[in-house]
Image 1 (tube, one colour):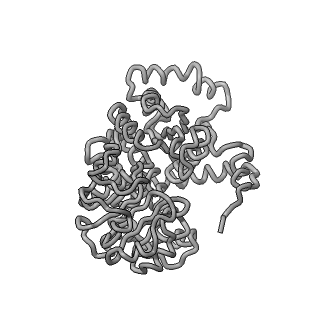
Image 2 (cartoon, rainbow, N blue to C red; image 1 turned 30 degrees about the horizontal axis):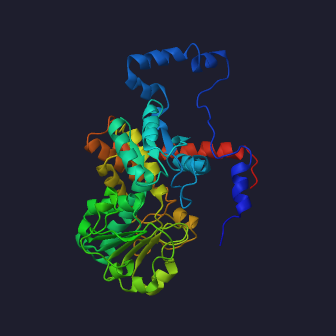
Image 3 (cartoon, rainbow, N blue to C red; image 1 turned 120 degrees about the vertical axis):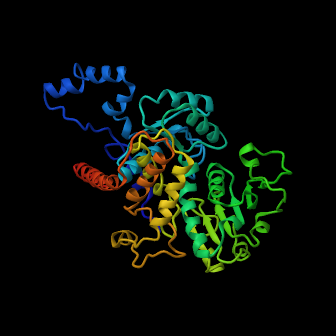
Length: 439
């Protein structure tokens, strides 16, 4: 049942003020002195201090809490290549999530080009403005090169959320699902439907978790990815198997895990029935998964099933990752978001799922008895505790691996995070209430 109509959605975006974000000053400008401090002549002191020591840019500007969400609109949500302007509402929405979940400010940068070189050059030139870069909705395979080259070129974190966000959240689910199912991660037989940015990143992350890469059967729109094919980009070729499956149904037989990042209707009940004991099914095509939740559970009641939807158990939602990953990276002054930080994020989420769920969280979903098990292997996307679990885990990994520049007292940091987000929510609530919106 739809929660809203098309008209309501358009009205939400068009009611004054249009869009979803605005810039609000955080320092007073009430009199001549304030004006002189904010701009000329007082601002010169900050400028000259930074010119003498660029590191002071972190102290005297908003860089430490400012992220660029950068896109060219070539792979937007489930909408595809709709272009930079049409994708802008999504990027603004990403800014809202950054702010609501982690009190991070965002400028969305929508680039009207498909040329990877132009994207790389533009983002690199933006480095003095931002504390980190979130690449978003850029199609594969260009996204892989763009991210990697920018990581190498820039001295701030660069993170393509379409790749790593899904990998981290679903990875947390895999960690717990394997435990519940009584399986060994190194023995898992995995079937992957889709070979885009998220599917490649998820598969690589699962290998980092311990999955044998040789046991991953990946399928793109042309079929199974195997060594006999000559049309494979290197990002796909790394998952080519020597054995060639005629179709996905054949690969499903005896499989332990299905990862879907493709399109609805590609998986049948019979395919699910043919899987091994206690199968793990993450069917994440949006808005409709590769197989409906109820169909999969009817075929295999023992399945640990997750989708990208909030109306079924085990939602794999990137909002459980990126706000808190960036929060931890920014607060630790990290120059990178490395594999150890991604792994720390996944393991913190897996651990949180084993904790008792607060009544307030269950109430948000209209549920009464949520506890660790086949229907709850990933924390709910609205679980407010993720900030205090995930951001410190990411910050600690940054410090442990030498990419952090700010030492944090992690126990105090956890307390400070709660105070910070509560204060942020209070400001936002009061500000939004000042407008008489009627959607």
